[in-house]
Image (cartoon, rainbow over all chains, first blue to last red):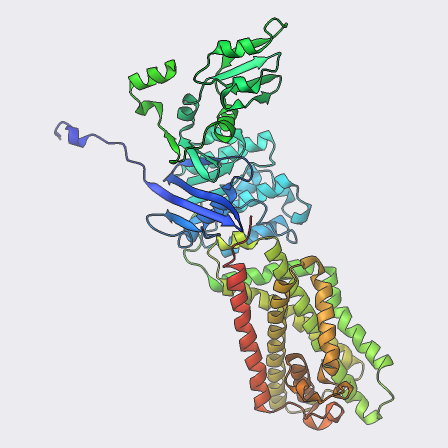
Length: 333
Length: 283
């Protein structure tokens, strides 16, 4: 059979991403304290978005609002093309840190209870508990669990639901490094199955699995973007070894210690020589150099250094979306 | 991924899940088991040994039966309040409702499951005490009637017991809201029940203890239910010891008990919807 040659119209176009969750200008406070102050967030269908920020910044409160557990004071939240969080509860699964587990029940009884009250619960908890090395402890009362074991049980409960969207509050908190890797693998497996996942975290390690990262500061998102794009957009990172330079020499007046080195960001108005002049270069073993940014630098920058833009979050586009000219200009800067 | 099991929220399944969860919690709580079984039986024998003067031998069986019923309901009331208030206060305090609100859970299924669990342990407490009284020589007149009469009376007793436990549990929810201290709830519940017991003249079984007009014992839920049960068990002609006022056997008193149940049940639904599933707790 002879077919017509393909035309431009026949070319497969990349599917535009579709927002599965949209939060607009969300505000929430308790008493006199304002926690969320006009937060905007979009989670695309099928993506894994990591919401990052230090403790107490409002990540858990936002997750409660998105899950339908807490009503925002103002703003709008929509999931699945116009559903409210309460209407979408059957299609979402939420892990709220430290608030699910009943200490008077065993791990297995907790799993059974939450499985029995969610209409989309599955039998996947067995394999998830196996992967998280929790199976041998399932018949112990949950009050005997360590913090890490509680996190694993909460995560098992949340992931044992065949939801379209998972809202997970710090699932890697209190876990050791090898178990964090297992959790990352699990989340990537779910993302590979087309699930949409929103993870909150204050651990830079969790940035590595994200399709996009959103940083929360002062009750709002201050930056969103793909990890590589956010890393590219960071000011140059300076590493100092062998001396303690003055904080004022760095962007935002902030320094960060990592092991035996001091790290900070280069101010746009200053060059590397500014830092070199500020340390005792004559001292033995003192080095000042630029270093490629890490996820910890990324976290530190958006958490402690970057100014909060009153007009809203900065969205950092992927490098592929930029023109060569823009990219060169920025790199030169 | 495994296929989904349900596509809609199963109300009865949720009710079962909540009931099972509470019974699993109670199974491990030795204090509650002791309260359910040991506490009312202990009071029964203490009362028979130290508080009952030498009675007319023809009345002894009825007095033992009335004390069995009194402390059976006393036990049911105690565990209903202690269990219900403790479990509800614990869930509120630990903010477990934050997770439950994020799930497609029916508040009335939660409440019904809790009621079912509380009623189960309340009924166990009641029946164990009645059995102890029966074994001790209590005379339960209804056991001597025809099968039809026994069926009607047992039905009446079951319904009044259920109503009594529902009233106790609804009051327990108010208690849990007012005093959100789950660690002290068992002690507080026992004190509240003892106060209700003594202030109504042993749940209305010894109205002579009340200095003023004791008519109110036919109108307060704990004494009304207890007096109604004793009259049904023993027969209206055998309860002179707890009159005046007359035994509450008319339909009006039954309607009053149902009214208490409906009113307090509605209050319980309002509490669970407002404070558990409509709450907005601080982080």
